[in-house]
Amino acid sequence: MKSQDTPFEGGPMDGRVLPVLLGPTGHPPKTYRIPVPDPDGGPPTVLVYHRVPRGHSRRLGLIQGWKYRYAPEDRSGGRPRWPWSRPDATPPGKPEDPNG
Image (cartoon, rainbow, N blue to C red; front, side):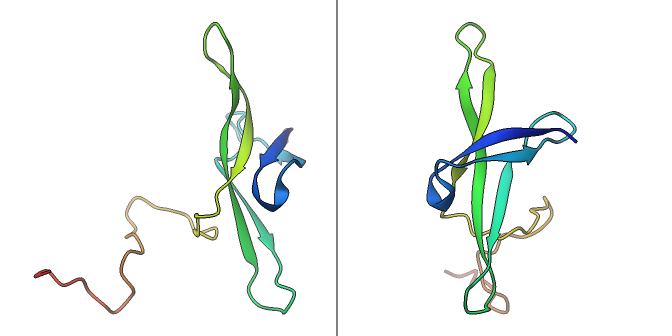
């Protein structure tokens, strides 16, 4: 498989460049998750990075490459987001009140 050296921006991985495997289209994945083990033996913390364009060409505006930007607000933790799944807006067992 092909890989591409991709820079990381922000968060604990700021300034590092890692080889990231490319998909069948030749692009790295849209989201890159890094599990960090807890020193006390608890569940690991997941660092989430999102793919953004590194730059654009002048004439045609084509993307020159990709980089990953840290997303501290993303708490997805590696769960796939399917179109038919419900968002986690309400806790389980507590339906929303239709009267307000």
